[in-house]
Amino acid sequence: KNQVEQSPQSLIILEGKNCTLQCNYTVSPFSNLRWYKQDTGRGPVSLTIMTFSENTKSNGRYTATLDADTKQSSLHITASQLSDSASYICVVRETGGSYIPTFGRGTSLIVHP
Amino acid sequence: DVKVTQSSRYLVKRTGEKVFLECVQDMDHENMFWYRQDPGLGLRLIYFSYDVKMKEKGDIPEGYSVSREKKERFSLILESASTNQTSMYLCASRDSYYEQYFGPGTRLTVT
Image 1 (cartoon, rainbow over the protein chains, first blue to last red):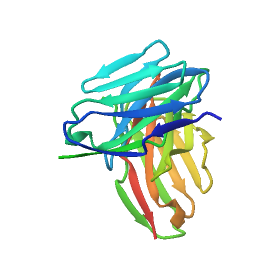
Image 2: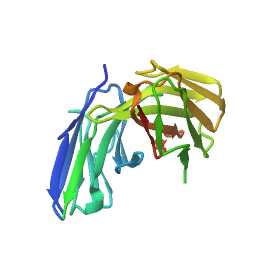
Image 3: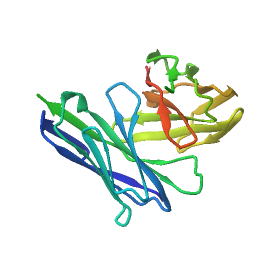
Image 4: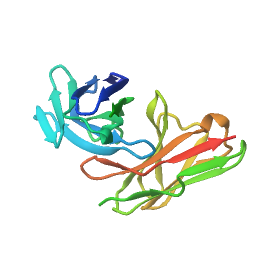
């Protein structure tokens, strides 16, 4: 069964610090991996998508990496801000046109002033 | 911008009531989804639809049904609400690149 595991489950950091969130998956054959950000009380919003051939992709202060060999991805947040406080969800899709991707349970990030 | 709207942000219902959650998208997407989200469990798929009048069960369909009479509208129905259906409900539609666009969610409380 396809699985997506995220760690840590929760994280508290001080404003201005960096942090890295992890995502390990067993989805195969792999098509792509998305990171979503979900603010409290809102729906998830896509931050970035990683395909098989991509190792690193940045979106402002967010940098995602992908190692398709070890089936791991990370989301690095640089110089955190209070607005980064949210849940970050890793979602992996397999090839073959499946309608349903596999969701991780998310990492809850709290940034303190 | 893709917009997915849900009929209510907050809803309180009594046990046994029939509950309708409405979702509308404005981007002509064929695929639409209903999830529930609970602390520690993440998003779990209830039902999805890949075309008008077409529906498929997700991972946790028990106690729910859906309706898709028009392409832009996907409704989730709780036939007889129970307290264990208290949750955040998220609707999503998906584009041809498989990106899902989520609505703001409906926080349902069943008392």
